[in-house]
Image 1 (tube, rainbow, N blue to C red):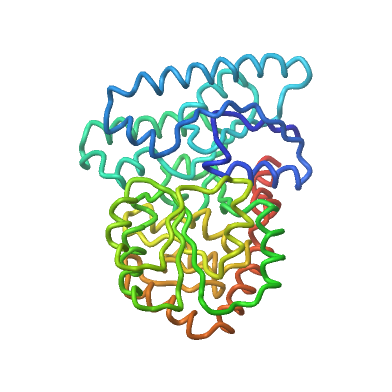
Image 2 (cartoon, one colour):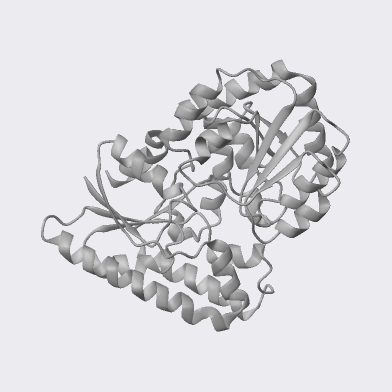
Length: 368
């Protein structure tokens, strides 16, 4: 089975496709990459939706990337045509080029987040707004081009149109091997006071960073808990304002992707998502899988997909509840032995179910 990983994806910002590629190779498929990163993350794309005069920037970048993708595809075609083409995450436009360049291949679209979902979560349009209708059209056109649609949870699968659902497959996000290597080393370190927790994200409404910040405000007098917040994004300034009274909060602009596994593995707790927007109730984020693989306690919101996938290997709190999040961190600080047990349980859960090979195997089963 020869699969081409294709598109303008960026594994540094969105590591999902890296997990799928690594997993497909572990399952025995030959995977080659034809990739020209667009250089615009989700926040930048949202900014374009908010300020449509920036749209020419997206078009120009996309055309420049597509010319490189087309040229690389023509060169590779001399050797062997692929059996399937995997269009990486945020590939709503790339999937059209993939279909054009590979008309006889099976097109796999990694559709973790819909464009309409992003527009709704970030309040870019009303329920009947022009922007929302445009996003729904972009989703529909992209899904129509794909032979197989990949989603990360059963809840995301249920949200697909019925005809698309029949040709979809669920592949959890998982984590790459580097995270498991970091976790194996991290578990040699016992959990000791003070408790160290980390959040890594783009501060989107799904992440619920203001909820974390409110919890940090509640914990302002607790010297046993130290928290590092990594990243920037839509709700960053609000989170900093809300947590300003806590002197044991550190703010880091970003950590390079190659350094992130060892960085997160240096903490006792990995904070997940706590938002209340619809998307937050349908997903299990990268940071939950990565934190578990890195040997950290995963503390995240109690939603159906997270409860099902993480089972007893996490501390779950009600979405949007700063009080419950603060109480969960206090509980771990009070009982380092329980924190250690949860760290080990999280790692074992990830090792059993969320390695790249385990994550990607349903794709090959679907391809037959």
